Length: 66
Image (cartoon, one colour):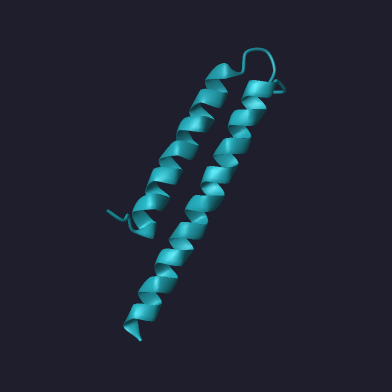
């Protein structure tokens, strides 16, 4: 079973939001600890992948119209 790029982008966006939420909850006194920075890094990667998958979805949609 294959997921569409848009469906995968939604999953990555939800994961990125979850990592941000957990990162905010794990920041006690300062945000400059390893766990918080690692979660922010993984969230950034998820958001970038989601944006790239959305752009791929629109490129495929545009190519199908031609």
